[in-house]
Image (cartoon, rainbow, N blue to C red):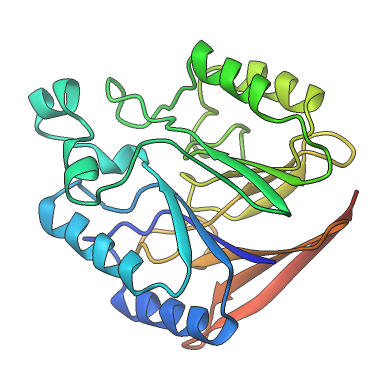
Length: 248
């Protein structure tokens, strides 16, 4: 099974050439699933959501998405506080949290956006309890996804609220991959000696990037093996840059 993990598209402050090249990549590689860890838009404007909706519609397989902090209004404080996800819900026609399961994968996506903060994210006690109760089958690849980073990388944003509690739960549950975005900085590292693996996706198409390249991950999984490949945009194409291999 091939899964593509993309993040931080930032429609409205994006490079359309990268979007078209990614769609071309998906047609060639024919993934089974695409997951998006938030920031579909740059300023949560109607036309930006409409562009994001059209992008997802053009993808060749099932696509799962959760919102990021840029997917709620920034300057309209009333909208931000009282109906922050109205455009995400009404234009994209997407839920704020999702789940998915097949013979190989068990996945849950949570909303880590805190509308009362511009950048900082959080997972509530109820969300942490849901994570604690959701993952039990060690035979499948268990994937948790949300937008905000849970570890400090370089000089970038601080980890989301309750990240320490989440890490303790993740160590105690059969969670194999934690997929996030937010930093525009691609990074793969295990929390413990092996699992869970944190996959911080870089930005797919935003003009602002903190590690020099627009990028995304692909996950190739079978019953026992996982290969994570980092693809970067270089010389008018997405190319393989690095990979990591793990086994149960």
